[in-house]
Length: 256
Image 1 (spheres, rainbow, N blue to C red):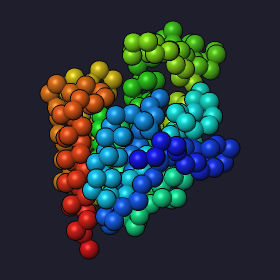
Image 2 (image 1 turned 180 degrees about the horizontal axis):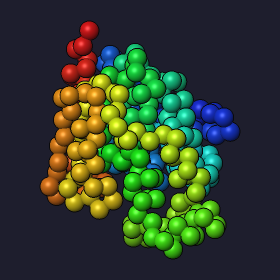
Image 3 (image 1 turned 30 degrees about the vertical axis):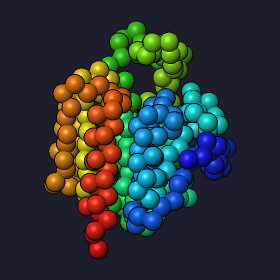
Image 4 (image 1 turned 120 degrees about the horizontal axis):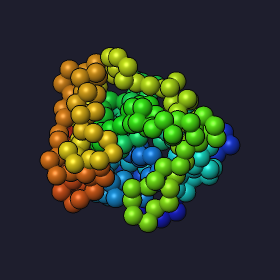
């Protein structure tokens, strides 16, 4: 697989991506999480799996993430969704399965809604739709709310050892409200499989259960991993992800 990414200009941003073609009639696109990049273990493991099975595969970095241009602090949900949509439109097969991790679970819903004619299946990992509201803003202390209102941002302590603290901006919160997906029934009716670790300290697994209930599709499958954490990056977790994607491709690949 190539080590040097391709680049797509999207507005003022240069979005880095990797795309590998294949003979399978359905492609796979991986949508990463908040502050993650396309070189993470799930994206690269899934890429290797797809290459081995001649499945078209795409991974990319949102603006301000990884190898794409821009400052992370300038990012919003709408901006990152526009980057995902531009890459999708650039590489998409006639039918696509979207795989969304954490924030990528929100992105896959937005993209599936915007590109209904091509998205035929979803696989979510610790999906976190509406996280700016439900998991950040609603959890802020009064002190943090005052800081957000007075300075326009709040610095959040990074729970990962050795990683720098990061900013949550007022624009991220307020712009995110334009893209909320879980306030009612979600009009997305494609086969969906949601994976979630029950030891996830960042995104409660109950959110995947709620998402399954809200999706218009009746036969949404949810797999809970009792000892799984947020990253779901252990070898057995990656094997589960590859199996879920393969099963989804087999299912939608046989549809007329």
